[in-house]
Length: 92
Image (cartoon, rainbow, N blue to C red; front, top):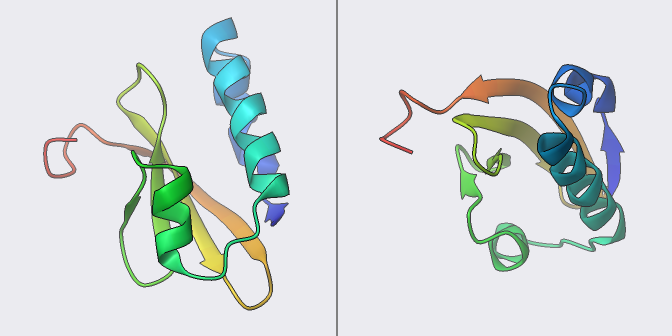
């Protein structure tokens, strides 16, 4: 998957070393992913969830924050659209 919008992650990546490591590993996993369907995302990232047909939220480990990503499956592209607070999202 080609990942676009990584600069949105910079404030989180430098906030603490644990979050920085999580983000670095998450980016590497996305770069090597070959998702063709939404179920492929859920299989690789069981904690992720669909916010719409092509929009997914990836919760950060030990933080009430998630990375919102818009995925174009046919193009093999993922766009980071936002960093979201999850405290008010369905109790997640």
